[in-house]
Amino acid sequence: MSVIGRADRSSRSDGGVVNRSKSRGWILLLALSVALTGAGGCAQGARRAPGVAKPAESPPGQVAASAPAPVLEPKAIDILKAASSRLAAAHSMTFTAVMSYESPSRLGPPLVYATKSEVTVQRPDKLRVITPGDGPASEFYYDGKTMVAFAPAENFAATAEAPPTIDAALKAAYDKAAIYFPFTDLIIADPYEEFSDGLQHAFYIGQSHVVGGTTTDIVAIANGWVFEQIWIGTEDKLPRMVRAVFHADPQQLRHEVEFSNWRLNPTVAAGAFKSSKAAAAKRIQFSRPDLPALPQGVEPPTKTKASKPN
Image (cartoon, rainbow, N blue to C red; front, side, top):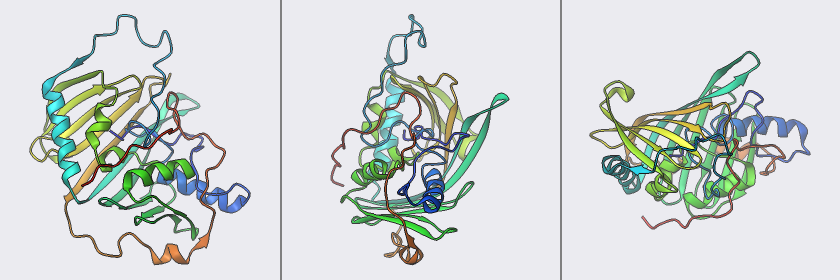
């Protein structure tokens, strides 16, 4: 689930949305990008950035030679398909995503950072992500024609032309500015396509009555680059939490996203995907800084999957 990892590290050295030649603006918009990517690029409980090529399998010696044979339990697959279908069928949706991720500390044990985003989606071509904190506040708007990254505290905004679908716009945001949202797999046209890509293991763990304030079914899935545990509402089929660990990460740091306040097919205000404050802000070039943005084992995007009609 695109809870896949794209997370900030203690160095805070991932994606950005500005031209490095404008040093002060670059620093501020770099902070903006950190917030936009769920505090850091691309690994927060998610799988891969839109269209990201499959990373190489784990290095020799990192996976035991006696690794278990692939097993896809029908019950686990059915739960994933039901959740994917529920999300794909929604013309519009809003939800809250709280991302937490471990980051190495100089003392050894990892630290934990968190950030929160309020998400509004209207298919096939509109997206708004408001991230008040922790970290630098940021706002992202996509209206089917343009995408805007806005840092309200610093009053800087970067604007770029965008493709006509959410899927393509997400890839463009990543390609242009290393912006990646850790809930990407939930808002693309076909969530199950991402869940099933390269899937080697899927098994049902049981139920929880704690996560998300409701009864959830717990599923674990794994492919060649990530292991994920997913909590999905038993009745409403909506994701409540995802935890991910990347095979190629030698420290096995954990990335987690909690989902709440789900609303499917709400009426969205006509002006929800624009901001007058962002429009009046100081302009900064929408470009990708020369900084690493992906966790170990994940390669940059090489293609865009075609969006399916809604």
